[in-house]
Image (tube, rainbow, N blue to C red):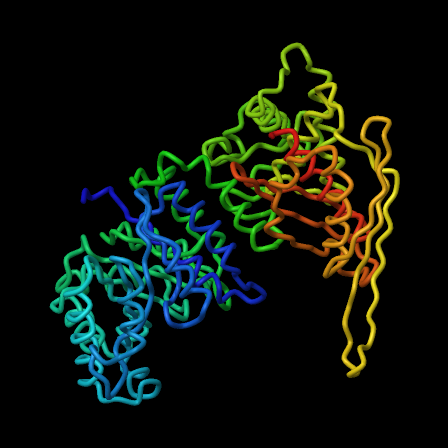
Length: 524
């Protein structure tokens, strides 16, 4: 490994799952894993096998790709058990991966008070676990939990813990700042002492962001010789989160001249950041460095005038280099380049249509003001564009729909909900009426629409709705809030997302359903 080559290790699927308010579904994990593989993250920590059913199923289904290594996370053998007979350790080693990251205590305070074992026994647990894992797998990383706190309290013991892991066969030694309390000026001395016993080409770091120093600490560690950086995308994680890999990679590659596998795909970082938030049903932070929608937004008149003459006046990088865009808030040119690029992607003819492009840009802005977010719903964006630029003939038109919900007691006194939907649509001049039941109002509406349309469009039988998410856009309004519905659909060839916004959740769902059906028929 060259002095300028850095390995990126993502723990979004495990550490990110500890974020307050986030709960990964199996489908969420698979989609995010594939997206991380696509940009070439070196290591992707998929979760903790044996800890929960979702992670167990994920590891059974997924394998490392050619671009990324799938890593299983786990811990050392427990007190009183041998490595061979520890169920937790063996669940990790038997998960089907060739790379694991095993966490162990390197702070004497935790050894005594959390593990409640002797300092020497903890070192034996580390040695035996790493040795046992190294015999079975290609790559074993030692995650030295609370290393920096441990070093400051008892440097000899913390150094001995990582030396024992190294001598037992660990291929990477990861120095963890688990409570995020380490400051940048402390790193040079600590890492310098570590390098006296551990080769720097197998050193990694993992910083939490409790003092808002995780990015800074990660960069300083690299400057001091560390070759692997761990963190999460968008800084997800418990408390204040982890080092945000968007910021780490952006600075390493664009500012500091380091190399990593993501370098060729760095223009995808903005879309990846927003894709992860949308998948997890989170509102992206506008002021995130590099990828936030306001990261290159200019509003002040003097700033806009200067930026239009020379963007370097107020922009530290070209926003396009990270996949973002410049936004001049008072200018009607805001976002034009991004829209034009998307229209070209969809092979929509735009030559000589300058006026229509500006009108479409204005339409997109109005839609986004209403609550639409097209970063995670490109199918709806493409349909919006085709309806604007082409003589787009809809496959059907809605005359009306009615959805009813009920909850009734059965003879035993238990309540059972039921839903029914009625629709009237036109295909050309032919009208179709349909009604159907479902296990919820949206399911019933979907069933009724399909029942009416399948007679005319039998290819609808191949359409599957695989995900449905609702986000409250105006929580201050309580039950009368504006809502956004995102639906993910698939057929045998494609997967796509559509979106709808309304004060009525059923209406928002219908808008997204209509786009999903239309997109499927268009692509079929």
